[in-house]
Length: 232
Image 1: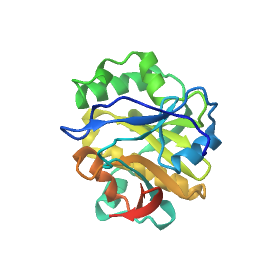
Image 2: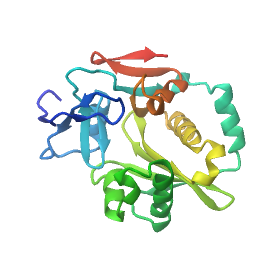
Image 3: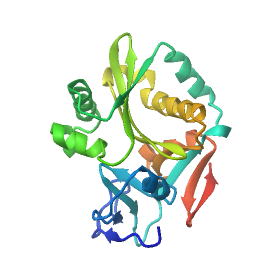
Image 4: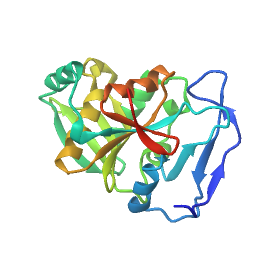
């Protein structure tokens, strides 16, 4: 770990906090990555996007905190129990991380509904798979079906000591089912059944509404000052 070469990006406008700049440190693409090494990197606050692995390196901000759920101690809240009950008829299929037209069509509907102004709303099939898949990580595309209709897809990395919730997209017409929450709850249950310790949720940002929700899953740890601490 101590000998891994990192490449730091130039400052750019932050996607999450107004009037701030962000920088990231990427693992040198020349390094040969695999699930074992990534399991160590994610435990040190890194995250993957496609084949790239990075962590925030902002000089004047430390708002982005890598976080993970301790699954053995997790107990669903009242709202989460309601979500589980609402989705009790959901069927789940764990698929290989390969291109399926049905997935891509749902992804595009989701992006055009949730992020119509972003570049992701016009992703090509190649860009879509490059963003979510990986050539070196043990990744699955988890399908959630409601009454034989594809309701959501969760991209999940299967690591040595946990699962990593990479991304979830769902049918905008089914937003009342809280499918993003349900996908995380499914991953927690899956990790428990597999005897794993954690579900990694990416970065928590307390002052960003779309990232602050992660504290709803308790107990939640954050990677702060190079060690994992409980956050509420």
